[in-house]
Image 1 (spheres, rainbow, N blue to C red):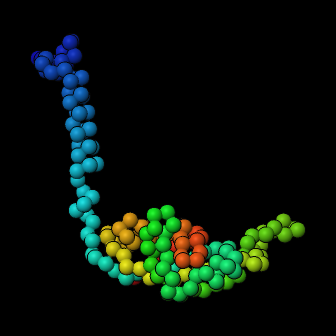
Image 2 (tube, helix red, strand yellow):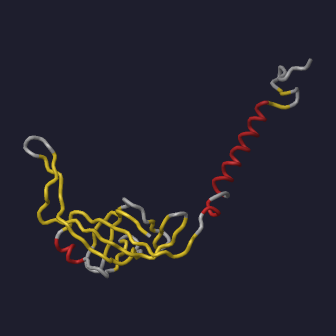
Image 3 (cartoon, one colour):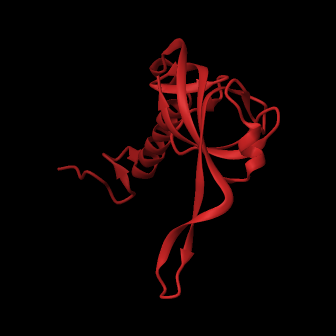
Length: 165
C-alpha cells in the first residue's frame, strides 16, 4: 500500500505539499485583488437624479454679529472647497448655554451671556445615490457631520442636525 505522503514530503509521491500551499496562497491573493478592485461598487449604486432636500444645521456659541449676518435667502458655501451647500430658508436663534461647575461640585447648564445658538434650515438640490444625499457630487449630507461654512458676511462652523427630503 502506497503512503499519502512519502519520506521525501511528496503527496502521492509526485507533488510537493509546499508547492500546493504556494499555489493556494497565490489563488487567494488573486481573488482578494479581484473582489477589492474589480467587483461590486459601481453596480450597487443607482443615481436617482436631482432631489430637493431640506436640512437643519446648528451653529453653537456665536456672537450677535454672526446672528445678524445670516438671513433667509443667503447662499451658504462650504469653506474649504467652495461647494454651494444650499440656501437659507429659515433662521432661529436662542441663547447659548455652557456647562458650569457650581460651588458644591455639580455641573449644570447655564446661559452664556452674549453668545447665541443659530438653527438654520437650508434647502439644496442634491443627488441621491444608494439612499444617501450628495451636494455637488462630493459633499454628503450626514446628521452630526460638522462643516465650516461661509455666507456673504459670515464664516463659522456648524453641525448638521437632520436631513429631510
